[in-house]
Length: 85
Image 1 (cartoon, rainbow, N blue to C red):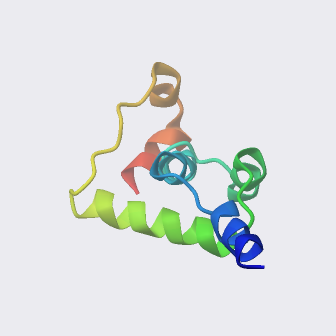
Image 2 (cartoon, helix red, strand yellow):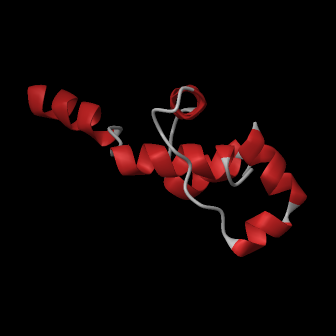
C-alpha cells in the first residue's frame, strides 16, 4: 500500500526544467496555458498558474533573466508586448 501511495506522489512531480519551460512558453511565448498543459502532460491548471506566478516574480525582481528572443519573436509585436509585461 505504501509503495502505491509513494508512486502516486512521485507521478506528478515535475523537474525545474519543465516548470521553467512551461512558465516561459506562457510568459514569453504567449502560448495558451491549456495548450502547454496538454503538450507537457501537466495535470492541474492551479499548478501551472503557480509556476507562472513564481517565474513572473523572479523576472520582476531581477532574480531571473529572460532568455534572448528569437528573430521571429522580435518581429512579432505581440511577443514583444508579452516580454515587456
